[in-house]
Length: 275
Image 1: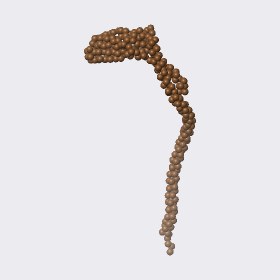
Image 2: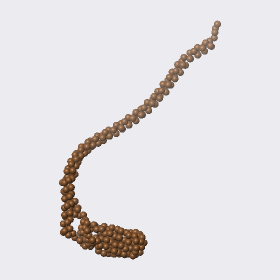
Image 3: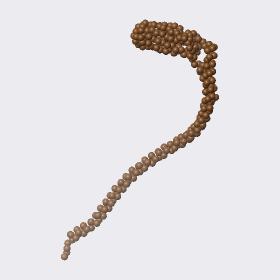
Image 4: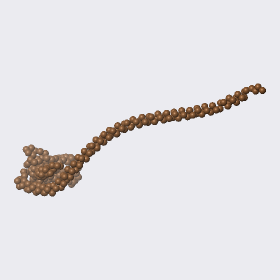
């Protein structure tokens, strides 16, 4: 981000080079090759000329003259790349049924490598429940780009470059403002990150202390609960002992008061009178 301003001219140059690699859409006449295999027929339409790096579109049309099932229909397109033939694309239709007078269309897209030359070679093969057929032919001519075309392309790229550079100059002040804001935000972020790290460290220490205190609390609570249980047992025993003692004292006092009177009456009752 800090070095983006110094890299923008390089980015513009890269975009210019990228535009140079984009396929050029040139007006071109097209050719048509027709075929007929049993109860199906059709055509393959393609441009007569193309340049290396172009993207070429082949338009395939298949017509059914009777109800038919296409078992396998294949279009193979190859090109001379460098000194070797190379398969550029293969369009395949498998197990497709057509009713009478029904049309089937496909678009076969071929991207030409940089060093493609000569004419492209096409092979059409068809296998149906009515029969088999095959056609081979040379199609689009891939020719070298001329000086005038290169000059036109250069002029077009120069216009695009001027437009992009003008947009760059318009966006540059906004970039400077945004970059200054970004630097300020990064500085604030660094401060907040430092504070966060410090708080996080304190939090971890507090958590360790909390866990230790929690363990001590659990130990003390266990001891406290055990002591309370023992105290309740002692309290109950003391209560029973107190009640028993009170009953015993009350019983003793009661019998202590009643016993002499009973004995006295007994003695009076049995003593003989001498007179």
